[in-house]
Length: 251
Image (tube, rainbow, N blue to C red; front, top):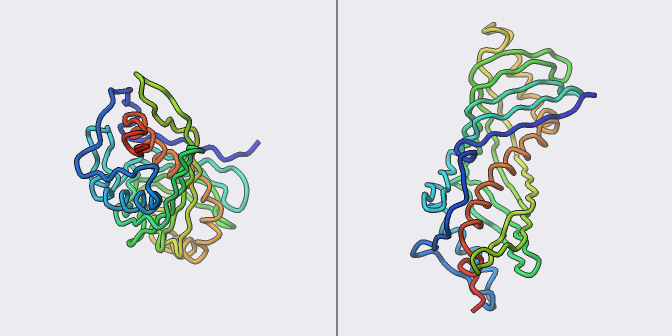
């Protein structure tokens, strides 16, 4: 049976082991649960902390997120208009650091966080690739460098948590994340298609860019899963090490 199979390995995350609790760094805005402007405080706190999060926070074992490195992403899609095996290696995702959180809602009672984020600059996926299969009506093959540029990138995510008690402190443990995104345009550049045949490769790149909405529609689920896997691990590292009462004090 043909199916979509996705495997994501995130650089550095596989070496993670549980560590002792740490305190939030100085200057981090804490939002009290009783604050009448709690949701506004949370939005302000996240946007204020974004420049530091982008650089990475070693004390939380958080890697830099711009670029965000995913060591391997495999899309094996055996049926439909886009039937390909596409492997990305050393995939760097650029542009996340230009993001602004537009709407963040924290539901303490239901242990749920929803957010929307807009990027001021395009989201660029830069990697080595190999591809074999069919795109719409045309065969495609090649190995080389690729760049996927998503303009007007907007994303939204919903994360669910469950409470875990450790050493008398309550933590939120990530239970599930849903991730979705939209873009106003996708531009694809794939070098060295068809064993370096420039004419065939140039024509295929033109074809891919003329038909980007259909191609993105077929591959979007795989990219959503990749983003969700990466950001789930980042969220997990943070909340696994910081008691929830440090992040959102009751009083």
